[in-house]
Image (cartoon, rainbow, N blue to C red; front, side, top):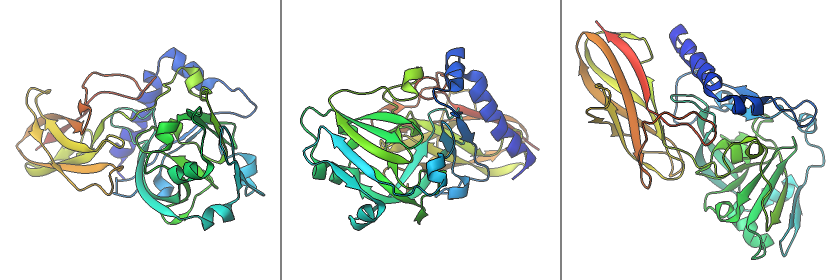
Length: 337
């Protein structure tokens, strides 16, 4: 990893916190219970189709709970509320159920334009939709309230909980979940930001009414629908290149809506050049793109945009991550000699 690349990543996170309005910054500092301090770990290194667990971004409100640090002894998942058949499941019971694997990209809602708080992993666990069929929520149960061992909770619309690829995951990239990433159990619902993907799950409650989530109470979005995101991974900001043909490349992501087009522009968006898309690893993962361009000597500014299957073209209107995820085109500058 080059020094320039390191500085680019740090600058991106500096932008995130600088760009958040005062209301958002105040929210980040609130500590409703003892020892709650939001934690953000930014990954480093080049982008790979599957993000190694050690380089996957980490975000939570207070670090790994002491209960989980101790190995989560006698852990049970309690499922109750407006359901016909309440359940209590330990890890052995969960492991005995049919296991499914899904490749799902997860993105932090606070990820800035061109940011790296996004990763793609192979997750294994049990189908949430199948579990809902087993417990049979009542017709009045419009919400699933998910509670973690750290005090974090989120309300998920029952329709989203029935997503065909939604998981209660126990494994990540072929290994048991690490404590940082939610051991013993975490939620994964494609199409939603990480703000909804509760870690260290202890409880699923089904209810006619929602309970505002931890960050929702502080002004962040209730829906947390992933916005269209595209990023240039190469060249790096400020890089010096030799004249000739070069492959501009990067990634794009739109939750569970599927990227259908990526374009780059060298003239501030007056004209756009179509990039070539790689094949995504799943319907819920990011896609790699590249565009081969001949470059002569000069100073270049290039930006990228993407389009998904349902929402249309990514907006160039710049919007901070707060309250519903970032908007805007990623742009880099470089020189050719």
